[in-house]
Image 1: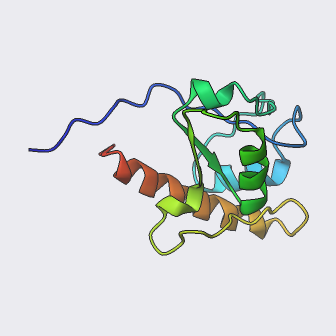
Image 2 (image 1 turned 45 degrees about the vertical axis):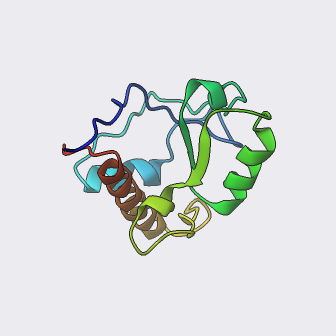
Length: 129
């Protein structure tokens, strides 16, 4: 018999730097190429130490941000902090490269890696959707 897993109740996005701006046009285009609708009115928000109590899991895209998050983490905080790609088979310990300063194709690559990480995360919590 399979153990019942906790229901995912909330997902949020936050950054450790460059927050408050709209989605990058190249990121929006990459999402649209995959048939996803970018949230054009969405504005990024800064990660806050209280997020370690609001959430069970905090995911970082790369080791730099993982280090930044760990430095913000209050002693005894309940949330685990991991790299997103730790959930992607064969990509554990790797970074999602920041495409911002590169060509537009970097956004497609980053999106593909993020999708692999999310698929692995969903599989690890037993989400069949």
